[in-house]
Length: 398
Image (tube, rainbow, N blue to C red; front, side, top):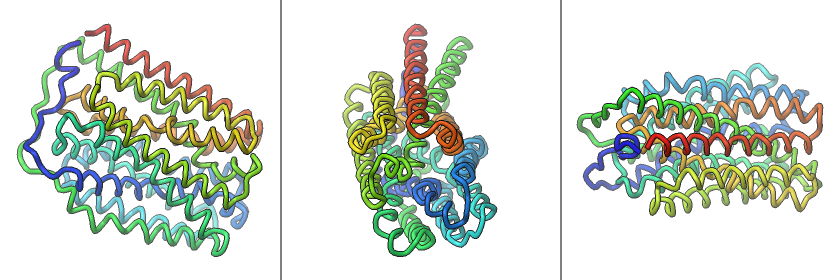
């Protein structure tokens, strides 16, 4: 494999990088919370506002669509503004979105708020990529990226707690209000994510064939991320509805959502720490995780309480555990282009997340939950094939 493909970014002088990475991960968590919170509260919101499953799903899809399609602009903004400014704005907007959504009386305000939240969510991943490249030694980048990736799991943790603890007694509006206030916490911590000064790293020159190879690999990996995220985001979005359909109570399902989110956080961090020892195996680990997530979706499709619990844990922990590893792998693939790496991962993940809520809502209304979950499992298998194809293309190029 050519040196410029595999070489990492220059390692900077040692700094206290973990507090800054933790602050960035916490900001990424709250930036993604609007979509997950509305998803977890969707049955209650739909019943109160007389909205169909597809209508609520469309509103959530627009949140993820705004993140995916706003990613090119966010990449440029992240490259020009201080990291602390971008992160503070993302957290403040996320808080405002959930506070406004708590006052919604119809689909218009709810959809508009989620659209704005999706745009601000797009800002976080490019900044996170820049901070990892600038502040984290290469031998720890998979762990750092795993911490950032764990934000997706953590973003589902709070909604699960809200469903279990706040929703039954106080309703969905109060639950969204609590989430909006909680989203303000990272604003006080973003100064820890201040990037070191100095000129940007020099981008290594790539030959024409090499550039084309890298471009094809990025496309395949973005496609893999989109396909895998489609099924797993659908499960996260309709977790409560799927759980109750399988025979679990609302409170039990909310607690299970929080437990699954904890598994997702742990798997991302542990996988990052372990793969730092052999980063060349990241692609194989990602493929295994995607296939395991597909198995979890297939178990959910069976529709019993037991298989739902097992499937949900697999889909959340392994099926979504690859996001940080994909970011770290892409950073190594495009040294010196940190915002491009974050942009590639983000547009793939959120393109799949865009499709998931509305498509899953519409298909489940027509086909039922079991058949739709099985289609999501098939998408996970195709995602693993696309990830494998990209890795093989790199190997042949080497």
